[in-house]
Length: 518
Image (cartoon, rainbow, N blue to C red; front, side, top):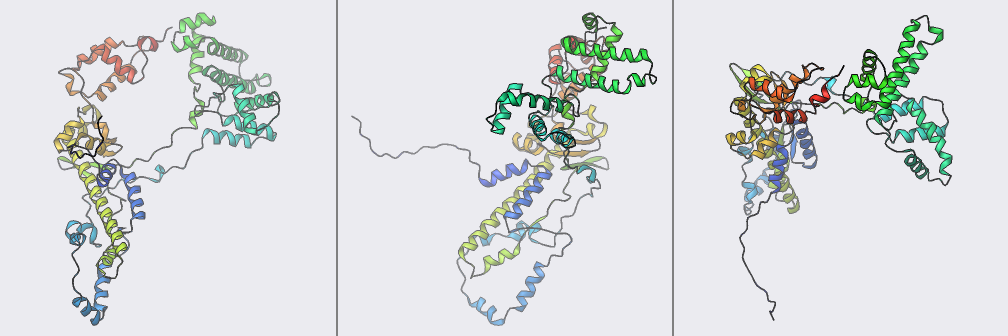
């Protein structure tokens, strides 16, 4: 029987440990300019040692310090001289002045290499737009209806998705309504109220909301268009428009609703001949109905649920000076940090409590680490952008069509860092160039296959495929084989399968689906 006994053993192992300073360096590098400003403001609130240099306020720390030294009594100075020296503190040996002179000298201003004249206009600062729920609730508030009906309508509005569709069935709506009201009344008593509320919501703007599928959405929009047409061109207004035109228009509405109700698969295939046979109408009449359907909105709620415009502020600017481009960091409106010297005086005073000294030292270490990481971020971004400028001069001079393939690992090897560092340096950051504002990731694209196609980035290749499809004849759309042959004639060696893959990546339908049949 084996006995359990204590035993010591040594084992050598390698582990990758991220220190708090390294973790902060990684996170700071991934921030863009706007995010970095927010992060600095937050750190300044938490760390009293960090100060921001205010351009408009004179900084007189040194002057006040020299004046206070002159005003000290002679006895106090003598006592300070006779006081025996304490044991050296390693923290006190840090030469703040030589290591971070820029941040300790309150009168120092880092000169701007170039003056950036382009600033974001006030038009970029947009107020929050109304959502679909806000728009519908406002309309309900303007109607004179019973409180119970208004409450039921608002309940239905709350169940719409971003596209404006009602995904809940009548039974699910009814069960949710009874549960929300916490009522013991019969469910059947609330059913007509919800039905009336649903019809009310469907009558609101935008047309087609609160429907359950595409067919209902399009049908409701056509019915409302027909109703509005009847209001303008009824019997009392027959003189405004020729009676034959009114009859033809109403017939067009009926054909359109028939196509939507019965022939949506044929409509998706753009098979006008089959549509004409299905509805037993002339091809010209069916074409008019299809044109009317194209003017409908399959997602009516999106016009009020669009993503809010996002302010983009470039982190870097590529400026041409003489015959070459230079990289300039956009540091306008960025806080200029310095270390508060008042807290350093606490460390030098003998009557300062030990806990206070330890706290101030820890805050100084944190502040110095932040400043180091901000400087490291700036250096990494500058070196990465300088490598981009050296590799993409044709793009900066002539535009997107001159973009060359460039991989993150190649740039990382050139500047001597890990590829993940370059990836963080270009992530979510923008650059202002003579060709416009681009995300830094835009410049990185692998090359297309083939010996001659190796000089063409995949992004540019996709642009060429899309351009060929956009310019095709809808009645005779281009096949993937033909597109591949056109690209091969331009020196880009791609196959049909490659073209099909890129087309699917861009969500472009196949040749059969794009063909318009007459």
